[in-house]
Amino acid sequence: MGWRGGRWRCTCWTWRGLALEQQLARIAQTDLLVGMHGAGLAHALLARPGTALLELWPQPEGIWRCYEHFAEWAGLHYGRWANPDPSKHQKRGPTGDTTEVDVAAVAELARQLLTQVVASSGARQGS
Image (cartoon, rainbow, N blue to C red):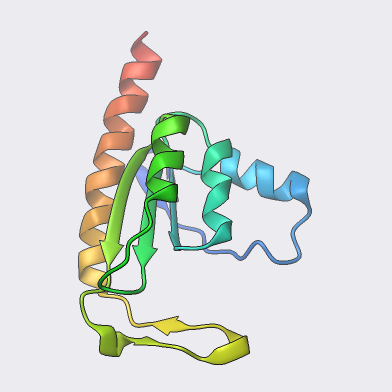
């Protein structure tokens, strides 16, 4: 997600099939990285300071804080949505798990994080 010309632009992609250079270029242009807990969120370590990371946690318990720590180390804003309902997380075996996400709750967290990104980018530009 990126702030361009007074409006937010949202782009969805998968890392699969992207060369490392393409992945790095996308992270460099990202203001808000949103993703389900997993290895792809490690890209947050390469984001610009002041970027935001919104981690989607699939289960109501057992939260691991590794990406929260990554965000802290990289100077990022951080938020987490944790699925409160175990019935909305389904284990699918080798094809991966699925989690039904509360879009309104995630959108509100994204809005809050983007407000922080805009505020910190103004502080960066003013210094």
